[in-house]
Length: 186
Image (cartoon, rainbow, N blue to C red; front, side, top):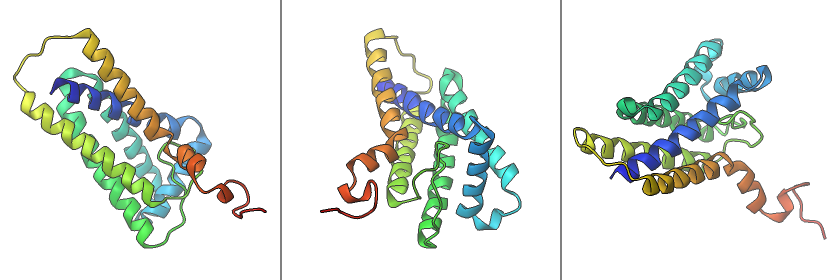
């Protein structure tokens, strides 16, 4: 059970850390995120700056809470809450046929698509599984096993890398004609 918790902590912690860094790495990145928030949740127009700051703060809190053993339960719980909220916003945008770039990791190159919902649901499942495992393990002591922790670290980092690079991977594996002109030449 500890391996599941440690893998989840590293996986989700890195995903949320990359999300924060992507959004605050430049004023343009943060402005793009604010625009995406306004388009994802139209009722927030005019209040996007405080909401965007709140989202970045909450994502930072998740990454920090998952890094500290005494706050892991809160980290998983907050991650699940945020991911459920983000997923609802994405589903709403897709249902409205809103063309908005995904700024989940700051760059916003790809429009929101069903794969983003699948990604968030997968992350929500990881947060929920981590929370359940953590709650079952509370009050127990675990012995540190460096080799096992190295494996869980590698697994969590790999999952985070794939998650963060999902749009780039979708582009690489997408239909050949869509990469440059949108048409198949021949």
